[in-house]
Amino acid sequence: MHWIKTIFDPRHPVQKADRLRFHQRHRFMLGVSLTPNFSHVLGCLLEGTGAGKLLRLQANAFDNQPIPRPTRRLFAQACGRTSAPYHRSTPPDWSSYLSLREDITQLVAQVVQGLLSQAGQASDRVLAVAFHHSGLCIAPPGQSACTLPLIDAAALALQTGLNVLDQFPLKDRLEGGRGWPISALPLWLLWADRRSPTAFEHRLVLEWNTQLEMTWLPPSDGLDATYPAIEQQAIDWSTHASESNAPTDSTDAAAHDPSVNPSHDAAEPRDLDPADTDLTPVVNQVLQQIQRWQRPRHDGLQALPPAHKLRIIVAGGELGSQRLRAALATELPETVVVACQDHACPAWGCGPLIAGTHGFLHVDQVPANLPWISGTEVPRILGILTPGAASRYRSLLIEMSDYRPPVMTLRDAV
Image (cartoon, helix red, strand yellow):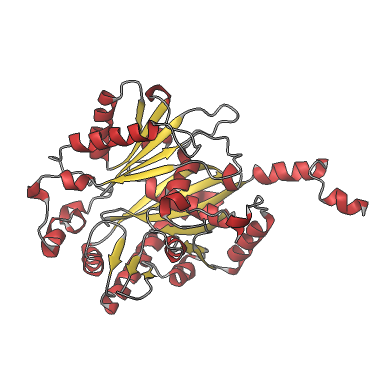
């Protein structure tokens, strides 16, 4: 029986060396998403070291592909609105949906091939491509809701040879959650202060899209027994836009939507911020939310610290983020306010980073939805895996079988 004790002894020097080598290896994932106004397909090549909550991420390359106007028209017809999540009480026209899904799959394949060409020798070590989007949630009255994906995962796996991970919001919705956004834990892995053992800086990520999403990232060395006390709140800044920019019906919405404007066929994703939008109400709501998070917590969790121990990271549309950064820097002179470009991410690159992080979390078998944010009772492992070429699928299975996830509580394991 001594040999059994030797095999499972965590203090054994050979096992220590194997664990160190395992957590220092480099893995690669492709993250793909869509701009909130459905103008571009975005992608990034994400490199990860470590695993699970100890995962450290670095973006090596970004790419984007403009979506043609006919495809944007199909999307407007299928969804009926221009901001996620997309809920309908009746299914869309089936032929239009299939055409839309085929077009988006082709565009995603082009972005994937472009990223693989930039990856060089690392292209053979890419585990999977992770596509992150809310999908079309169909909820007929009195019936269970279903989610229609925007890509054909089997066709994408066949075209690229890569394993495909998609439909991350699906299981969260099946558990009774909202299903979108599910970006809190990926943002914490990407941008929280996780210096060991001196992590002290609280950070706020402001994603400037059709909504302004605030995510509070507490500091941590990654060794928490439970999830970090992340908070997330959305502010609808579009309600503060001038009435001259507000469409009156679904037809006007398509006419005013920048996603169907021919001037938005540029090589780079465009800003969602109207030039004459008054940011004063939005800044006031941000300051009020910060004050609410700074109050003492009755649940035993940590409250947001004073302004001099806080860093604000603004991501999203370039014009909107610049104006928002300037306004916040004026209102909070003791707080460090930076752009996401200071963290090696372009203004439009937050979506594919979150997508790639969700891919790593699926591979490492880490539940990625936080119950107190999404509304579920328990966190779940998110995403659906579609196998690619046999060699890549075999490599992914070996990767997933080698990883030993940490012991979970009984409630999380059920």
